[in-house]
Image (cartoon, rainbow, N blue to C red; front, side, top):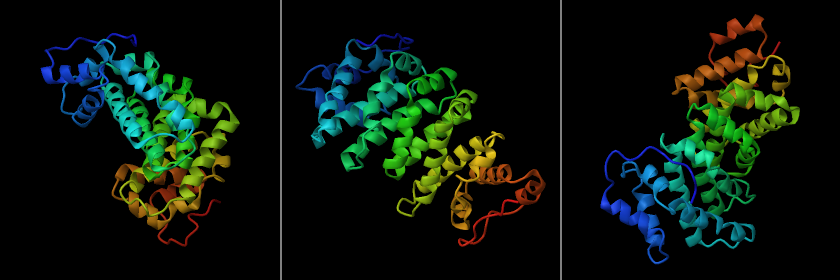
Length: 307
């Protein structure tokens, strides 16, 4: 059993939930119990606490996850197996999101069991499903402003895994992985980590540049969120004055086209970040003038000139 205690439940959980969790231990009822728990995970109060504290439950869930490693390498994953693993990962996200189980979850190094799904090189549907579900767990951890969480993610080398997802994943995977990078960069420790090695900084900058160059209209729903995360990452990188001149060569002017500025215009925070980014990339002499201007208005414009 995975170690780590959490605060006890304030009331007895419903018998139905207890029965479903107990059903995970039996091969006869495991698949059905897992499916029902996953589909109704948001309706059960304190499900995360109960999952974590139920004897042997996390070990059972880990066994399902690790059973997918070998077929993952040999392209032998069945649709049924992918569904089961994704259901387990969804329950992991439930545990990662709960304030009483989040820290025990990372102290038990549970997230690393999901990294093999982030590091796959295929973008086929089954692999993408595992990728985005796993990213959801890491994203739930990253969005919390907790130094211990950030330190854990950095210590487990989440950066290269997210960069790989940004390169290989579909729009939703790219959006979530970029969000994770952005949340890490928001912390001083995360920003310092990025700049410790020149290769690391270059990898992040180049990966963001490729994302921008490959922006398309195939996923209208997720595109605004992806743009917001890309802009946020660039803004944080631009706050380092020493490397700011080098960053100029990695920020594609395509990001400043009217087309994309219009997409983020409905999000005041994203639009403000875009303007701050341009200000940081310009000399202080021209910054004041540009900050009061609108972003470029022509899709053919190369963006504001850098004196």
